[in-house]
Image (cartoon, rainbow, N blue to C red; front, top):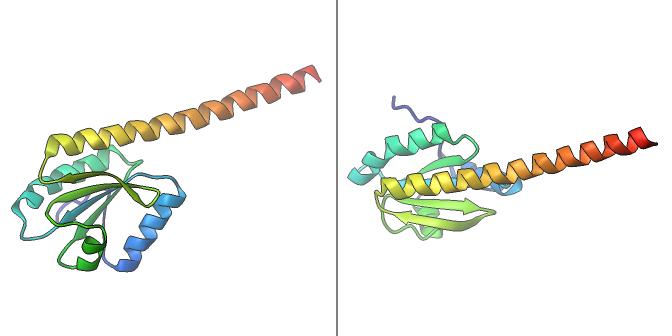
Length: 140
């Protein structure tokens, strides 16, 4: 069996809905590979997508077979394969149509950096608050 890395292969409409809802709740970026088994460019991009999923564990990577889940592909207006959608808060924030390795890698790096920056700010703010509490307690 092929290595799927950290890619979640969608196996039901329910799993699709659940992962999207979880991503929105936890403010995660989701990257979806809309693919088909008969699609040559999709087969070319598949190992690249898998490797990106291993390097960027803070991003959720999904794979949807458009032949199995035509309704999902139609809802998200996927008309060609491969199509990569970047989803935040249930909305498409980026879309790549075609087997563009460089663009996919660049967009994933961009969203990974954005995630790290947001997380870093939250941690830094928490540390600043903790330090202020320690100073206030020491002065009391």
